[in-house]
Length: 437
View 1: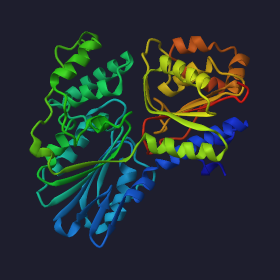
View 2: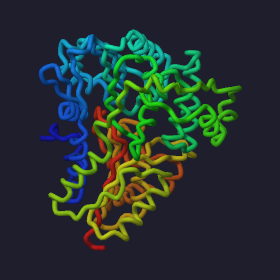
View 3: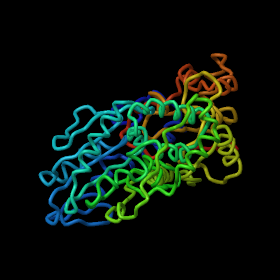
């Protein structure tokens, strides 16, 4: 029975009615964003007509069809697209953060890159992708899968060895608490594969980008740093972010090797960028499951952002003031790393909320890709977690201060395991309120 759950330790954790409901509601969200299901739902071929994301292409009018993909959803999506397109597919290249067991791709090349920091392996893989795109003609069609994790993978500095400098820059920005838009503004100007560059290489072919949005608010120019979108930012914008966080002195660099992104409109005239799934799809499915279980439910926001400490306080304040039984959130917080512990933003958020938890309150925060800066996807905060912490003499404030949420939830046993899900729409959170308020 347990292997039917997307949450692998579901049955180990679900030993209260609130926990069982909360975990089941989250699983409904994960099921709604399942990459394979999304592609089968959004893409099909009938008599040489390709239907994809509300648009159509006559494949008889296309000399060749190629498939390019990058990010945490890319191999699973590519497997479905290869099955749909069959012999119509000429070839392509997919770059993912992992190669799923039993990968079925035959017509398309694929590779595994490093994440969350770039590497020379990523550079070599991107060069193979670019070689395919540069060989396209105006009567070719290229489908591009774009998903979270793509920014790190699409590392292509002017000097290939500077990818190691990029790793240092990104690490510094993350630890300083830069948000995803600040981070990706910088990344766009560190690579010749982001910020519209894939569109430039594919020109003059027709391009359809299928985008799995992991950006709060669904600004597509930031998903995987917008490789098929015309970038509105400039080198000066990236420089401002780097100066804001004093990155030059922290990294001890003379310069960053920033590059300008393509601004010529012709590169983007033959491109359609379509969201195939986002955070809201997960939240709507969670709301439906919650209401089936008898809870009055509200989607508080699909674009939650901000420092993890203040967001945790906000969520608890929402719970006090709201009339609903269940509050749902989607988005991505930031953690300003001061300590030397281990953890991720979801588990740190659960720690913050745990400090205020009441008798039958339940809070869960989960990375939809199953990887909260480590092998655990997230954590549960409730009275059971609190009692276990007291039993073991764990000081919540101390673990928060040391940024050591991983150790805390390992000791209490209240972490969530999904493995890499192959999906990614940022983070999902649920607050189930005590009936005794």
